[in-house]
Length: 110
Image (cartoon, rainbow, N blue to C red; front, side, top):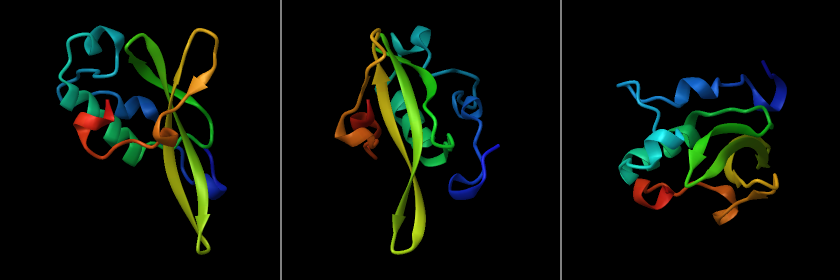
């Protein structure tokens, strides 16, 4: 568990399944999945995940590893926790779009 600026670390694995037990970000599922379901799951992870400042793999999308990292920003004396998303290719380089911030609309999140 992490403490301090990051607070309590949230288990990412608890956020990866839907209520029906499906894993929208698993490579097996994403091949035929509804974009709205994948986008909604990414938005849920964006809202709830806390990685303690470390990169954590949350699944795969379009053949890339999908990672999330919680960062702490200070704004007007308050610590704000945000999640940034990355894809990682075979060369272990991490790439972002929109600075890693997730779009609020599930259709645009994927």
